[in-house]
Image (cartoon, rainbow, N blue to C red; front, side, top):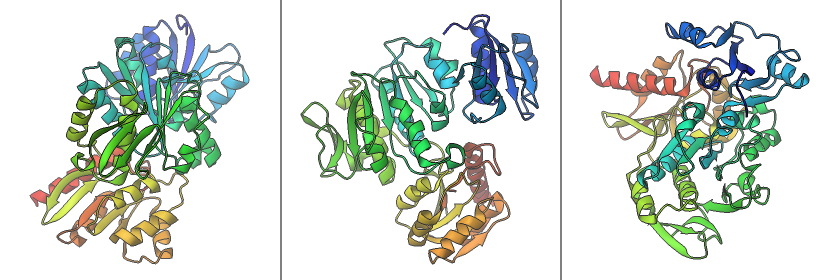
Length: 454
């Protein structure tokens, strides 16, 4: 893709938009960074952008008429229904995204991880496996580091491990990872995609351009994911927590993780040697084993990483124990299925903090799991009423309402008994009260640690 002297509109002035604008300047393009809102930047950032040659259109979008721009780059958080995207498409101006842009400028093999839940844990684990095997590895994408910031520093002998979201995949038209991983597909982001068919289609774009010699790693236990087999031209590799054997894949047999990829079964390690809790995390591990074994990582190195890996922040993250009560931060549980998996990870009685911005989810199945695993439910945010109603409909009535986030944590703290768990797993996005799930999780940790000092 030739960018020199091209006029490029970058839509969305968040982390991705800023990274893309700087990348474009480095390629000799003439970018304009636009945002319909008025984002607040750290002092001096706007001056630095202007000095670098980045045009700004904040508070409203510029007109995108025929010939006005050569390219429009959408940030993943901005839907393709906004006016600049619609006008660009109507006027024959190409529309792309940061993921697609980054991959136009690298010859490094990519392992791309998508799915409704487990992306960050699996991406981080795969990155750790490659790094421990002595391979120079870039870990980024939806996990927090826009790939455009670093792709130029990696060669064909290295590896890029990218967490990719359905939002990023919407604008990925030539993206072709060497290994594409789909962990699971459950209802999420239906407020943006409209229906499950569109959501599944977005996820499936992760392997749309693969060829023979590439690999597609799929969850055998998840019908929607397993149903994608045969739609990829890459070689399909399954992983399964439930099946005792697969013809080609990674599975669990007699408490051991087994990889059978080229006809011969090989034991990787014992399940009991893993350090991350929950059946869903076992599935993440199986996917990571499949993705790294097909890329040639030796078993001894792989097993060593699996035994050392302790998970990621905001996903079943142990925070503290206070008077016999354990506090667990699962702020990354941003949809009902993720929070169901969190509830299933523990046998102790749970005081659950849930609620936030609904993304078009149905809470009925989540409510059934609350009835099964939770002693007390604390609800807050925009979805408090929806979650409480679903819980009552399931026959669960021990519900407290909190006016704000701190009150929710304090209520849970006061109600919890020794031997129980206070679990923050909201089943909702954070955007009604926070800028991100990280901000929400960090505040939870701060409040909990402050409780220790009281």
